[in-house]
Length: 221
Figure 1 (cartoon, rainbow, N blue to C red):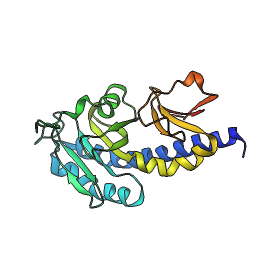
Figure 2: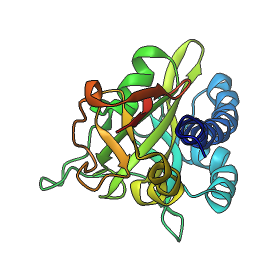
Figure 3: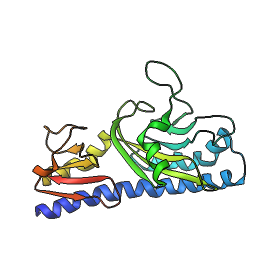
Figure 4: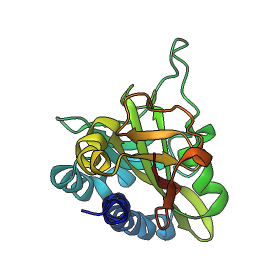
């Protein structure tokens, strides 16, 4: 197979994977809009509105966790709250503490929340170590939830880097390529010298092809 064909295949696999996640999140988002536009929403109503859909999403996809993360003041009973299910047992993560201190974690400072809040658009964040949910390297897809013109939170899904490696490495090896994020940091690479999170000098690459609609590109070594 020609290198340019393998490169296009890498890009298509990445685009298709995150597009499928985006479609799932759009369905979850739509389930929340009605309750929020109908009046006050508490954590129980938010969770109940999306739990069956989120659990089904987790059953049929490789994501490790998914759900809704409330904007400050959006819920009537909690300032910060995560209607988020994760792990093999799909347990509910309702609150999260900051590492070391045990204080409630202000997740609004994280890029996966802050960027959709600023742009009003879906976003993919990572790679980063997810101290809120998994304590592992992940990529997080998030979509803002708007009601009456106000963002009331985001819906999102976490993909472990290990899962992305399983999906992408065979094709990346064929092309001798690396997947990088918008800051030129390595997500997954066929070259063991390019570790996750390391900066890649794209000027040294033979070709760089962006993934449509995503802050990701595939670079040929």
